[in-house]
Amino acid sequence: MSVYPVTAPAVEPVTLAEAKAWARIDTSDDDALVSALITAARQRVEAHTRRALIDQTWRQVLDAWPEETFIRFPLAPFRSLTAMRVYDSSGTPQTVSPALYTLVNVPDCARVYFAAPAPTPGRPIGGIEIDMVVGYGASAANVPEPLRKAILMLVAQLYENRGDEASTGPGTLPAHVLAMLYPYRRMRLL
Figure 1 (cartoon, rainbow, N blue to C red):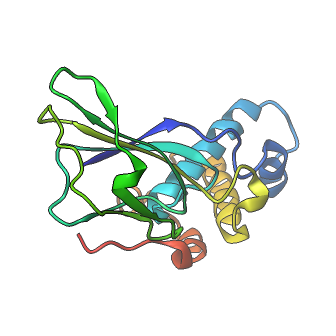
Figure 2 (figure 1 turned 45 degrees about the vertical axis):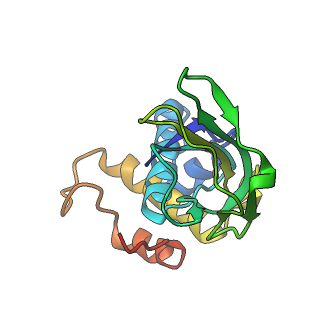
């Protein structure tokens, strides 16, 4: 299984003005840098929590249907299922009929249950595609405030240090940011 973004969020969870105010940046000389840091900080928060903050479309690709009668979606908060396709042997996508499955739309644990056998993919690799929208909503106002604050903290830290600060390993987040993210982190058993 692989999962990758199809459509990026239309906006960031924090604005340039908010990030500059938080980091106490009075000049516009580094606006492009701060904007890039906002995106990088959002992506780090999303990767750590396994949550999409602003609505975005992702595609889950499977080689075969799981042995269970259901599929769990790996990202949260789940908003909607936009497409489910199976590729036939000629490489043509066939839409999976919604009559074959039931969608359990729980934001943190969405899944699809099959009432009848799903169509068998005709190609052995990447024969199934599922498109979904995940995120808290279309605007920054929908994102929980602790997640927005974590982004602001990361932007300020990245702006001030610019790679000069030693970390304890790749992907390490500062302790104060981790504390903000802890209640939102989705754990997995695998």
